[in-house]
Length: 315
Image (tube, rainbow, N blue to C red; front, side):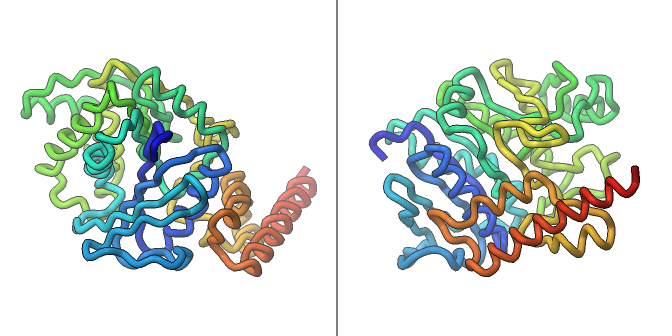
C-alpha cells in the first residue's frame, strides 16, 4: 500500500458479510484505494475468491487493483459490535510503520456516497463523528449525570460539553489524534465493571446507564476530547437525506427485507438506504446472484410505487 493514506476497518459475522461486500463496493466507487481490515468471526464470505486463510484464520484478498480486504479472525466472546476500540488498536499496530495517516471504523451496514477524498479532508479537522438519530441528549440529561457520577469512581472528570449524541457506526481518526482510540477503549473497559461481558445488543432499556455500550462509551470519549469534527444526522441519511453515507441502522437490514410484503402488511416503505445498498452489490464484488439482484430491485420499485399510490389515495 505505498500510496494509501488511510486504512478502513469493520466487523462482521454470519450474513452481515452482505453488508461488507456492499461497503467495499461503495468505497471502491468512491475512489478509496488501500486496505479494508475486516474483523470477523465464523466463516469467510462466500464471495471471496480463490485464497486460503493462514493458520491464524487471517487472509488478504485482492478485491480489485489497488484495493484489498484483510480478513482478521477475532477470538473474543463478546459481541463484535463492541470490540470497535480494540479493532482500531489492532489496525494502528499493524499499519503504523507503513506511512498510514488515518484509520476509519465504518459499520458494515453503511454505504459510502461521497468521494473518499472528502473523508480524508474531514478527519484532518479532528476526530470525525456523525450525530445519531437519537440526538440530542441534553447536558443535564439523567444519563449524562449517571455517567458523570460513575466515572468519578475511576478518577475521570466527565463534563458533557454539548447536547450532541453521536452514532457508533463511523469514527475517523488522524494519527495526530491516535490516542482517541485508546481513550475510547479505556472508557469501555471501565464500563465493563458495571455491564459485565458485552455479548448482547443493549442492556434492559434506555433508562439503563449503558444501554448502547460501545456507543455510550464513544460519546463519553467525545466529550473528553477537544479536537472533534461532527456532522449532523443527515450525514447518515437519518431523517433528511444527505450526501455523505447511508446507514441501515436497526435490526432489519436491506438483505433481510421483503419489500412488497412489508408495504402491504404494515406500510413499511423502502428506505433510501435500501435503494443505495442494492445499487452497490454487483461490482467489483458480486454480493448476491444476478437473479436475486434483479428481483430485489424490481421489488423495490414495486413497493415504492405502491407507497406512492397509497399516499395519494389517503389525500
